[in-house]
Image (cartoon, rainbow, N blue to C red):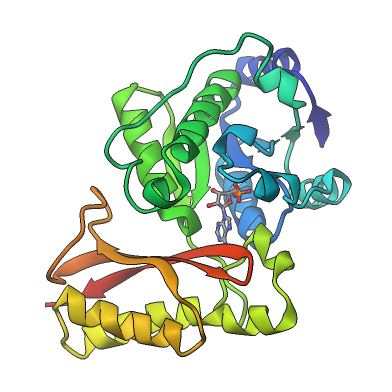
Length: 283
Ligand code: AMP
């Protein structure tokens, strides 16, 4: 695996591969790799001739300075894991490569960026994501880009971005990788204390409770949400939000029919966690 630091070096490596007829897969990440990230890299390895992983803790998508300051960083460990997963190129640029002096452009996806995470973290979060993903797509020109269902709203925002700006890339979404007790893997989980780690499993329990209540025949979103909130409060967790929405538009649903996306965000101690599940009601 080759580590690249500059836009020019990535362009040179990718265009050489392209001239040889190779397809290119891109996995955008902020590092601190766990099995969730590795599942994306492995999928890319299966499907593409060359796999590029970007490792960039994007400052513009952080709404809290402390979250950015304490974000786990260990490039050497990440590089070893990426190499083991069969990655060809690790693009790990300094901030100045991505945002040189005078940088002045923001890509902003209206509508789907505004609710849920957008409402709680601020509009700037998805503006930061859309801007850096646009740049990465322009730098790498991947045939396929890999994202995790863990960040479900991010997937919706990126799909809209790609559609609206006619970006010639296929978006591939990989399922959420979880710990055996259900907790979704996240780079932020290392910040949880022992007792917080145990309480954090309530997020997944709440999503399972929702699925069970829908399977049992409940179709009223308010009633289903109450089941989820009960599972969270029994673990001492007050969610920032728990919503049932359409997966395409993120519009709230009042009645559960067909496929619905259930999303939760909550602080466990000082650590903010998100999780989600696709809830299916079979007729
Ligand atoms: P991040 O480094 O947190 O920006 O994540 C990079 C990519 O990995 C994003 O597309 C995430 O959705 C994805 N990802 C993070 N955690 C998981 C997980 N537990 N399962 C699957 N994908 C994940």
